[in-house]
Image 1 (tube, chains in turn green, blue):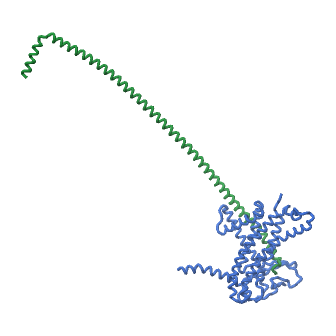
Image 2 (cartoon, helix red, strand yellow):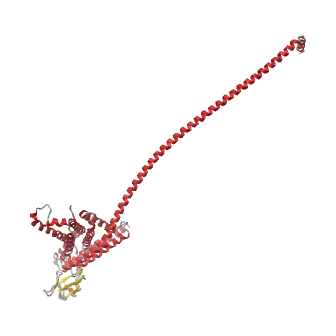
Image 3 (spheres, chains in turn cyan, brown):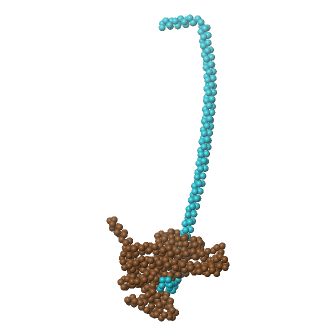
Length: 163
Length: 340
């Protein structure tokens, strides 16, 4: 068998074997393997895409959340501001109401006191008048019994002597 | 302590290298001793009817292989190749046939016509490599079918890497993303068949399968047939009516194009055969220098250079498988290409 002379037997066996091998490998090895590799690659690509989509979704949700938070913040501040204003108004009103009420009470008391004073003054005046009349009456009575005055003086001097 | 661990780790590697060298040297050594001046290299590179591993003393260690002969007058004949040698390993005729020194079976009656379909060393080696390839590929396929979503590990990851390499670097660029599916099984089979046989051919005592012209001829023929069976209208149009070339030039162009049809598989055949055989011849020559010069000192140069050649052949084994597959893909791509 020379180096560069093809031999019939070898060509025959190689052809037969290669045909069989090509058939078996193609049908039972390469096609299933290639299909599996392709399938896995597809699924990996799909998974990556899904992950990317999910990431975008999460980012969008995050943005939504941020926006929502911002409006919520604003609303809260507004509500708080309003509440403070309302409180202040209520307090102010209550204060003024109370002031007015106390003023009224004071006024009323003053008026009452004035009236009481007037009444007391009238009463005093009456009393004084009655007393004056009584004094006058007594004085008059003394005037009328002038003669006894002397006697009275004597009596007083005596008293003073003895003292 | 440190020394003992060093020795224990270094020793297996040393023994491995030594045994590799010994096995590499054993064959040529025995042959060189048997017949000084005999071209043991050619004996190593060429096909044989028996599998000769080594010769110890004057006893050759040989695995006899089946001889299958077909002749129109006698029909099918089957016997062992050991029938061609006697107890003292001298050639012996059997049933009217004899084995020449060049491993060729000839009929004693010169007029008889017969066909030699023997399972030679190359056929046996090729069949074994095919069984190995089938075992690996079918095992891989079973793994993929069991759990297709899990990426393989270790050896199987390497296999997937190579499959994806053939697909992404060879098939898709030359055949396109859709047409590659049709030819991927063929390309993968060719790639792994050639690579595996290239590698097995590097083992000591192994046959030189891909360095045999008959094997590469069949491989090239398969690509040739597949290419022309799948030839599109555009492909044939390019051969018989090359676009852009004046009609009157066709008497020159058509034969040239037709010749081109055959030079492609021819180059495929020669390239693989020559690369692998040349590698073997160089390595055997380098090692054979030791025996030709009858000096151990030759080993100082031969062994390192031989080791380098061996590593180079490992690279060439892959490279030639890649080139054969790539060129097949290019030829197939040209055949199935369709222009508007």
